[in-house]
Length: 313
Image (cartoon, rainbow, N blue to C red; front, side, top):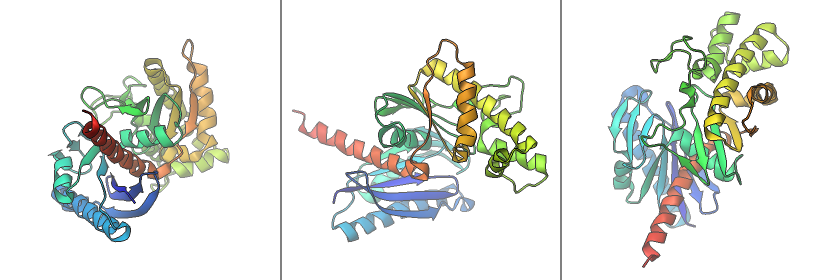
C-alpha cells in the first residue's frame, strides 16, 4: 500500500501517522518534543521519530513511504522549507525540509501548523465542498487559515491568517506581539482560562471549567464568556469583511464547548454584520487529527505535483 509519513509538531508533543492514498490513518503515534533539552534536541527528536515511522511502514507494508509532510508552529517559509522562528521550541532558520529529506531519502513538504490543519478541514473536514473558508482554532493563541479552492493562502511573507493579532480593544490588554488589545488576549482558550482562574481564585481552573459553569448559569462565568464571545465576534466580522468566506470553521479547545460557544457566537456575529454576507459558522470536524491529516495531504500533493511534472512532455 502506498503511504506517506505525516508529522504534526506542537510545543510539547508530536503527533504522527502513516497515511494511505485514500486518506486513512494506517498507523498513529505520539512523542514528546523534548524541548526542555533545547532546540537541537527537538530537531533530533523529529528526525528520529520520522525515521521510526519510515521503518514501521517498511516492515508492515513491504514498501517505504513515498513522501513525508510535516507541520510546525511559528513562522514558516514553506517555499524554502525553513522553520524560520518558533518561540516555544527555541529555533530559528532551521532547514527542516532538507534535514528530513536527507534522513529519510524521500521528498518532504513543510507547512505551518494552523494552515496545515486548515487544509485538512477544508478538503476532508468541516469545509469539504466549500470554495472559500476561514479556519480559526481557538487555543493558546488564535490564528487562521484562509482556504481558497482546495488550498490555503500563506501570504506574500507567510503571515496570512494571523487574525489573533487584529486589535479589537484599542489600548487594551498588552500582547506579546507588542500591540495592545489583540483578539487573542480576550478570546483564546488561554485568555478565558486566565480570567476564570482569577475570578474563582483557583489557578487550576481552565476554559473548559468556565464553559461548564456558563451552562449552569454562573454569573461570573457568563460575564467572562460574553467578553470572549464579543471580542471574537468583532474579530471575525473584521475577517469576513476582508475575506468574504462562505464558511467560518471554529476549532481548538474553546470550540469543544459546543453550543455553549456557537449559539451566542452566531448571534453576536449576526448582530454585527450590515452589508456583509453572513457565512455559515460551524465547528471543526477533525479535532486533534487535523494537523496529521493535513501533513499527509501536503505529502500527497507533493507526490501528485511530481507525477504531473514527470508526465508533462
